Length: 208
Image 1 (cartoon, rainbow, N blue to C red):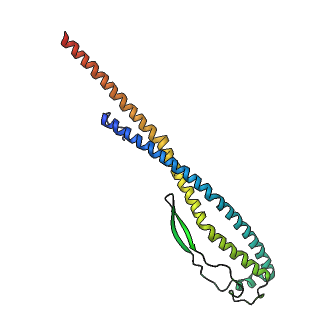
Image 2: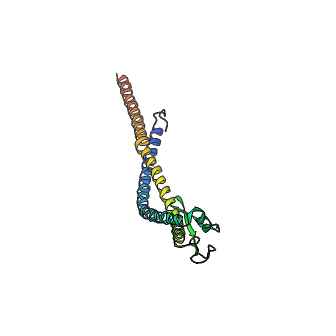
Image 3: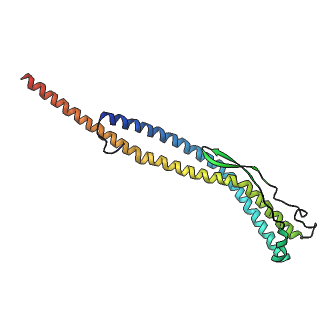
């Protein structure tokens, strides 16, 4: 309601209805916030574990890569990445608490055998083979963790937005509306008091 709304009973009733709606809306938003916090904690732990596992795998992969570079050199390793290939991932839309997310329905097989790389067994050497296995395993881990990471990010964004909405209602809109209700009620009470005094004065004049 505008701050310049006329101090009438109709506007007073309208403001009180708006206040009731805001309080009920804030209550619903607080419940949504609590649910989002609970879901965020449920999602965060597996995501943290997956990140830690991916970091360990990456360290192992880069350690193996350094050893392979020492054995084969950069030019010697480049052909071992052939042939190039496309990895197709099946993705399905999903929602959680009204939040858009994604679910992986089909993941490709990332790991390859030496034969799939077009190499004879033992041709690449153990250092190169271990490097390839480590990084292919890392790719599989990242693919598996991607939907959870996306959900975690969107949960955090939804939680921040819901918290802002609750704060706006509780700290700005509700106090402003309560002040407006009090102001209108005070003006109406003063008018009623003036009307009573005027009526009493008229009655006294007639009785004289």
